[in-house]
Image (cartoon, rainbow, N blue to C red):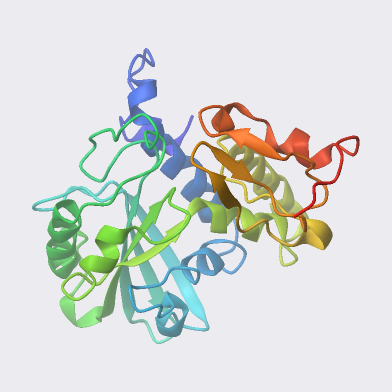
Length: 273
Protein backbone atom coordinates (compact mmCIF):
# COMPACT_ATOMS: atom_id res chain seq x y z
CA UNK A 1 0.00 0.00 0.00
CA UNK A 2 1.46 3.38 -1.03
CA UNK A 3 1.28 6.67 0.83
CA UNK A 4 -0.85 7.99 -2.04
CA UNK A 5 -3.45 5.30 -1.33
CA UNK A 6 -3.32 5.95 2.41
CA UNK A 7 -4.16 9.59 1.74
CA UNK A 8 -7.08 8.75 -0.54
CA UNK A 9 -5.36 9.88 -3.74
CA UNK A 10 -6.28 6.58 -5.42
CA UNK A 11 -9.75 5.10 -5.32
CA UNK A 12 -10.14 1.62 -3.87
CA UNK A 13 -11.08 0.38 -7.34
CA UNK A 14 -8.07 2.05 -8.97
CA UNK A 15 -10.29 3.68 -11.62
CA UNK A 16 -8.59 7.07 -11.20
CA UNK A 17 -5.08 5.65 -11.35
CA UNK A 18 -4.14 7.23 -14.67
CA UNK A 19 -5.25 10.64 -13.37
CA UNK A 20 -3.10 10.33 -10.27
CA UNK A 21 0.32 9.62 -11.75
CA UNK A 22 1.79 12.73 -10.12
CA UNK A 23 0.56 11.66 -6.71
CA UNK A 24 1.94 8.17 -7.24
CA UNK A 25 5.32 9.53 -8.29
CA UNK A 26 5.38 11.85 -5.26
CA UNK A 27 4.46 8.93 -3.05
CA UNK A 28 7.05 6.56 -4.51
CA UNK A 29 9.91 9.07 -4.46
CA UNK A 30 9.37 10.68 -1.10
CA UNK A 31 8.35 7.53 0.73
CA UNK A 32 11.74 6.16 -0.29
CA UNK A 33 13.35 9.37 1.00
CA UNK A 34 11.41 8.96 4.24
CA UNK A 35 12.55 5.39 4.85
CA UNK A 36 16.26 5.96 4.27
CA UNK A 37 18.55 8.37 6.08
CA UNK A 38 18.05 12.05 5.12
CA UNK A 39 21.69 12.34 4.04
CA UNK A 40 21.30 9.35 1.70
CA UNK A 41 18.72 10.80 -0.68
CA UNK A 42 16.43 13.64 0.44
CA UNK A 43 19.05 16.23 1.32
CA UNK A 44 21.28 15.53 -1.73
CA UNK A 45 18.20 15.83 -3.97
CA UNK A 46 17.03 19.09 -2.37
CA UNK A 47 20.55 20.47 -2.72
CA UNK A 48 20.20 20.14 -6.51
CA UNK A 49 17.39 22.72 -6.50
CA UNK A 50 18.26 26.24 -7.70
CA UNK A 51 16.42 29.52 -8.01
CA UNK A 52 16.16 31.71 -11.13
CA UNK A 53 19.56 33.24 -10.37
CA UNK A 54 21.23 29.85 -10.13
CA UNK A 55 21.63 29.95 -6.35
CA UNK A 56 21.56 26.45 -4.87
CA UNK A 57 19.23 25.56 -2.03
CA UNK A 58 22.24 23.75 -0.53
CA UNK A 59 23.46 27.15 0.63
CA UNK A 60 20.57 27.38 3.10
CA UNK A 61 20.23 23.80 4.32
CA UNK A 62 21.94 22.88 7.62
CA UNK A 63 24.96 20.60 7.63
CA UNK A 64 23.53 18.58 10.51
CA UNK A 65 19.87 17.65 10.95
CA UNK A 66 18.10 16.37 14.03
CA UNK A 67 15.00 14.99 12.28
CA UNK A 68 12.60 15.50 9.36
CA UNK A 69 8.82 15.22 9.50
CA UNK A 70 6.89 14.50 6.30
CA UNK A 71 3.33 15.77 5.81
CA UNK A 72 1.89 14.62 2.49
CA UNK A 73 -0.79 16.76 0.81
CA UNK A 74 -1.49 19.09 3.75
CA UNK A 75 -4.75 20.98 3.42
CA UNK A 76 -3.83 24.66 3.70
CA UNK A 77 -5.94 27.80 3.25
CA UNK A 78 -5.57 28.21 -0.51
CA UNK A 79 -3.74 25.12 -1.66
CA UNK A 80 -2.68 21.55 -1.10
CA UNK A 81 1.04 21.18 -1.86
CA UNK A 82 2.28 17.67 -2.47
CA UNK A 83 4.52 17.67 0.56
CA UNK A 84 5.52 19.80 3.53
CA UNK A 85 8.83 19.01 5.20
CA UNK A 86 9.68 20.09 8.73
CA UNK A 87 13.47 20.00 8.87
CA UNK A 88 14.51 20.20 12.50
CA UNK A 89 18.00 21.55 13.07
CA UNK A 90 20.26 20.54 15.92
CA UNK A 91 19.27 23.67 17.88
CA UNK A 92 15.60 22.71 17.70
CA UNK A 93 14.65 25.37 15.14
CA UNK A 94 12.68 24.30 12.07
CA UNK A 95 12.95 24.94 8.34
CA UNK A 96 9.59 24.59 6.56
CA UNK A 97 9.99 23.37 3.00
CA UNK A 98 7.07 22.96 0.60
CA UNK A 99 7.29 20.66 -2.41
CA UNK A 100 5.22 20.58 -5.59
CA UNK A 101 5.94 17.67 -7.94
CA UNK A 102 4.83 17.63 -11.58
CA UNK A 103 4.77 14.75 -14.04
CA UNK A 104 2.29 14.55 -16.93
CA UNK A 105 0.37 17.83 -16.81
CA UNK A 106 0.89 21.49 -16.14
CA UNK A 107 0.92 23.24 -12.82
CA UNK A 108 -2.79 23.95 -13.25
CA UNK A 109 -3.45 20.29 -14.18
CA UNK A 110 -4.15 21.22 -17.81
CA UNK A 111 -2.50 18.95 -20.35
CA UNK A 112 -0.16 20.59 -22.83
CA UNK A 113 -0.07 19.85 -26.55
CA UNK A 114 0.71 16.40 -27.94
CA UNK A 115 4.46 16.99 -28.05
CA UNK A 116 4.65 18.24 -24.46
CA UNK A 117 1.96 16.10 -22.88
CA UNK A 118 4.51 14.30 -20.70
CA UNK A 119 6.54 17.41 -19.85
CA UNK A 120 5.32 19.31 -16.81
CA UNK A 121 4.48 22.94 -17.39
CA UNK A 122 4.88 25.59 -14.72
CA UNK A 123 2.54 28.56 -14.63
CA UNK A 124 2.75 30.80 -11.61
CA UNK A 125 -0.77 31.10 -10.15
CA UNK A 126 -0.69 27.81 -8.24
CA UNK A 127 2.81 28.58 -7.03
CA UNK A 128 1.66 31.98 -5.80
CA UNK A 129 -1.12 30.36 -3.76
CA UNK A 130 1.23 27.78 -2.32
CA UNK A 131 3.82 30.40 -1.43
CA UNK A 132 1.19 32.47 0.36
CA UNK A 133 0.17 29.38 2.29
CA UNK A 134 3.78 28.60 3.12
CA UNK A 135 4.01 31.84 5.09
CA UNK A 136 1.28 30.60 7.42
CA UNK A 137 1.78 26.84 7.20
CA UNK A 138 3.14 26.68 10.75
CA UNK A 139 -0.41 27.24 12.06
CA UNK A 140 -1.88 24.34 10.06
CA UNK A 141 1.03 22.13 11.13
CA UNK A 142 0.71 23.31 14.73
CA UNK A 143 4.23 24.64 14.97
CA UNK A 144 4.91 27.74 17.10
CA UNK A 145 5.87 30.58 14.76
CA UNK A 146 8.89 31.31 16.93
CA UNK A 147 10.26 27.83 16.12
CA UNK A 148 10.37 28.45 12.36
CA UNK A 149 13.68 29.88 11.12
CA UNK A 150 13.18 29.80 7.36
CA UNK A 151 10.72 28.80 4.64
CA UNK A 152 11.55 27.50 1.16
CA UNK A 153 9.58 26.06 -1.75
CA UNK A 154 10.81 23.48 -4.28
CA UNK A 155 9.18 22.70 -7.63
CA UNK A 156 10.11 19.41 -9.32
CA UNK A 157 9.23 18.93 -12.98
CA UNK A 158 10.13 16.81 -16.00
CA UNK A 159 11.79 19.76 -17.77
CA UNK A 160 15.44 19.29 -18.61
CA UNK A 161 16.11 22.95 -17.77
CA UNK A 162 14.31 25.50 -15.63
CA UNK A 163 10.87 26.35 -17.09
CA UNK A 164 10.82 29.79 -18.70
CA UNK A 165 7.81 30.83 -16.63
CA UNK A 166 9.89 30.41 -13.49
CA UNK A 167 12.73 32.42 -14.96
CA UNK A 168 10.31 35.19 -15.92
CA UNK A 169 8.61 35.19 -12.51
CA UNK A 170 11.82 34.90 -10.56
CA UNK A 171 11.76 38.50 -9.37
CA UNK A 172 8.41 38.08 -7.65
CA UNK A 173 8.26 34.36 -6.83
CA UNK A 174 11.07 32.74 -4.87
CA UNK A 175 10.95 29.10 -5.95
CA UNK A 176 13.76 26.58 -6.16
CA UNK A 177 13.57 24.14 -9.05
CA UNK A 178 14.99 20.76 -9.91
CA UNK A 179 13.92 17.78 -12.05
CA UNK A 180 13.51 14.02 -11.91
CA UNK A 181 16.64 13.49 -14.02
CA UNK A 182 18.77 14.90 -11.21
CA UNK A 183 17.27 12.35 -8.86
CA UNK A 184 18.18 9.52 -11.23
CA UNK A 185 21.74 10.87 -11.46
CA UNK A 186 22.01 10.74 -7.68
CA UNK A 187 20.79 7.16 -7.62
CA UNK A 188 23.23 5.87 -10.24
CA UNK A 189 26.16 7.63 -8.56
CA UNK A 190 25.23 6.54 -5.03
CA UNK A 191 28.20 5.82 -2.80
CA UNK A 192 26.73 6.79 0.55
CA UNK A 193 23.98 4.22 1.13
CA UNK A 194 24.11 1.37 3.58
CA UNK A 195 23.43 -2.20 2.54
CA UNK A 196 19.81 -2.11 3.74
CA UNK A 197 19.16 1.13 1.84
CA UNK A 198 20.48 -0.14 -1.49
CA UNK A 199 17.43 -2.27 -2.30
CA UNK A 200 15.07 0.68 -1.80
CA UNK A 201 17.25 2.99 -3.87
CA UNK A 202 17.59 0.44 -6.67
CA UNK A 203 13.81 0.01 -6.89
CA UNK A 204 13.39 3.78 -7.17
CA UNK A 205 16.11 3.96 -9.83
CA UNK A 206 14.34 1.28 -11.88
CA UNK A 207 11.04 3.15 -11.51
CA UNK A 208 12.53 6.39 -12.83
CA UNK A 209 14.10 4.52 -15.73
CA UNK A 210 10.77 2.93 -16.56
CA UNK A 211 9.20 6.40 -16.64
CA UNK A 212 11.97 7.68 -18.91
CA UNK A 213 13.69 10.04 -16.47
CA UNK A 214 17.16 9.06 -17.65
CA UNK A 215 19.98 11.09 -19.11
CA UNK A 216 21.81 8.95 -21.63
CA UNK A 217 25.56 8.91 -21.22
CA UNK A 218 28.29 8.98 -23.86
CA UNK A 219 31.86 7.71 -23.78
CA UNK A 220 33.32 7.22 -20.30
CA UNK A 221 30.05 8.20 -18.70
CA UNK A 222 29.88 11.70 -20.24
CA UNK A 223 26.36 12.94 -20.68
CA UNK A 224 24.97 13.29 -24.19
CA UNK A 225 24.06 16.94 -23.94
CA UNK A 226 23.20 18.10 -27.44
CA UNK A 227 22.28 17.26 -31.00
CA UNK A 228 22.72 19.53 -34.00
CA UNK A 229 19.74 20.38 -36.17
CA UNK A 230 20.75 19.96 -39.81
CA UNK A 231 17.34 19.86 -41.49
CA UNK A 232 13.95 21.12 -40.42
CA UNK A 233 12.66 17.57 -39.89
CA UNK A 234 15.85 15.76 -38.92
CA UNK A 235 18.30 15.73 -36.05
CA UNK A 236 22.01 15.03 -36.36
CA UNK A 237 23.97 12.97 -33.83
CA UNK A 238 27.45 14.46 -33.18
CA UNK A 239 30.52 12.43 -34.13
CA UNK A 240 31.79 12.40 -30.54
CA UNK A 241 28.89 10.18 -29.51
CA UNK A 242 30.54 7.25 -31.26
CA UNK A 243 28.31 4.53 -29.79
CA UNK A 244 25.35 5.89 -31.73
CA UNK A 245 25.80 5.42 -35.44
CA UNK A 246 22.69 7.15 -36.67
CA UNK A 247 22.95 9.89 -39.30
CA UNK A 248 19.48 11.40 -39.17
CA UNK A 249 16.23 10.70 -37.41
CA UNK A 250 12.80 11.91 -38.42
CA UNK A 251 11.57 14.09 -35.55
CA UNK A 252 8.09 12.65 -35.87
CA UNK A 253 9.53 9.24 -35.06
CA UNK A 254 12.17 10.26 -32.53
CA UNK A 255 9.96 9.56 -29.52
CA UNK A 256 9.48 6.02 -30.73
CA UNK A 257 13.19 5.24 -30.92
CA UNK A 258 14.72 3.18 -28.14
CA UNK A 259 17.82 5.26 -27.45
CA UNK A 260 19.13 2.69 -25.00
CA UNK A 261 19.24 0.09 -27.76
CA UNK A 262 20.93 2.63 -30.03
CA UNK A 263 23.49 3.35 -27.34
CA UNK A 264 24.28 -0.32 -26.79
CA UNK A 265 24.51 -1.15 -30.48
CA UNK A 266 28.04 -1.65 -31.77
CA UNK A 267 27.10 -2.66 -35.32
CA UNK A 268 26.08 0.73 -36.70
CA UNK A 269 28.65 2.67 -38.69
CA UNK A 270 30.29 5.71 -37.13
CA UNK A 271 29.09 8.97 -38.58
CA UNK A 272 31.27 11.77 -39.80
CA UNK A 273 30.77 15.41 -39.01
